[in-house]
Length: 158
Image (cartoon, rainbow, N blue to C red; front, side, top):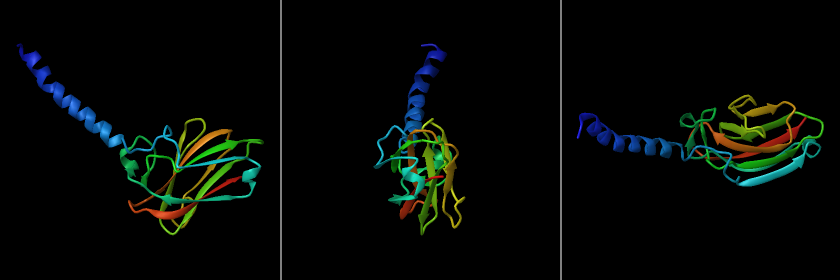
């Protein structure tokens, strides 16, 4: 066996172990491919009045180790799948109210990721998606720390 062949033989198991470890670290990361815990459907007109949805914020996925924007903790599975029908191209506003420090992660209908931590004030997130188009929006309500807490997602079209 040549020295090069020996090196490749020894390196192969190490490369496999590194590959498996990297894959395992990302297994809990949020992905839009999972079915959401709850489905929300409605038109822009229906969301002219704010709609509130209860949720347990947080999860095991630490966003700092995931290929999505943001910091904090979310579940791998989206909390909500919003099937939204745009009529006049209003802005879609998503915000969270809770007694704890929450975050908001959204994958839009055109596969763009958005994250917010404290834009809503008082440690609460708020995202404004200008002229939101029709389609499916996956939404995660997270927490800044690993602890879970009760929260409400508010969806409104303006």
